[in-house]
Image (cartoon, rainbow, N blue to C red; front, side, top):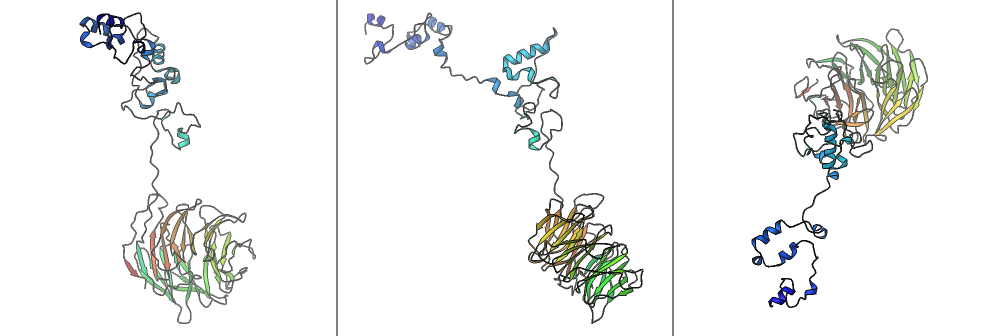
Length: 501
């Protein structure tokens, strides 16, 4: 290419296949950097290179191709991550608040203006309190409304410190520990596997009574001493035992239908009362009245202060009476029978004031709540498997829970609002429930046969269970009444297995 042609093309070498019209350059008032960069570098003088750095800014079409990306600060929410550390320095001339507000608005946009953060809304009294931990996420309490998905009230958390920006991290209360194994096991030879009998009871003086065959044995929980209370002889057997509330006397129901009262401290029989035609399988003491239920379908009320065998007879069940409990205020007596009925009797009435027939199997398990008057729990046998709760004032059923197994016994805790149930076919388990939610606190296993017998220690912390496997097992399941601390997996007695007779 000659000199004239070079001048004509503006000093740009073009390939042979490229015409001059295919190259279009915008004409600028000042020398364009594009022209300088398109020429060979060695054809440029030092003055030309220096002029390149000092040349004017490119046109708008060129600046739109910038390689830098500057995000919008107003949408970045830098305060959320604690990146804004300090406010503007206070000037002596006054007007520092207005200056700070204006500066923040210019630097970070209108979303970060001082108007969004009232004075004192954060820890230091300034809109942006210093943070020692960069990139520490903070909850936007000042931005989240009552319906915001990030609102602490929706999440169920308490901010605790006003608008400090920190979410409370208080750990939830750990569940109460219930030992899964018994801390003591007693051998109980000849403990009968009969659903309709009640052969175990624990006195208020810490003495356990157990009916084994024709005999009643007393086991002291204080010193593990075993005492033989009585022997009914070869023609009779023990069907039920029940301590008085004071714990000094014990009643014994026999297979021949008698009701005997014994002095537990002197092992001496005080009185024998008749009236039933056949076995007396259940007993219940009030403050002054002893009630007995029998296979003859009758309930007899005995008063030791009068010479007669019984003072009243309650007739209402159509089959054997196997459950009997007086309320804590001695006003009502609940009875359950093999006729699937649960009856509630007034202390002066001869007819039941309530007939509850929702159970579909025998009702042996009965328990009055010590925490709420008129609250009664009952459990059904194999064909029912339900624990039902009743308001005896209105006669309404409050709740019903299907346990999946035959309900043999119910005992309400004195220390906490929980209830224990023991079961037979087919799980043979012991279950602790929280009332009224009826959520399971613990499920205990260990018996190889139906858990037919249940009693509670006088301090309310330990229960004893008995089964046809001829064992008595002691479980620590409840906290003490004074200090509701978790129950430790230790007992009053050493671990091991001993014999009750």
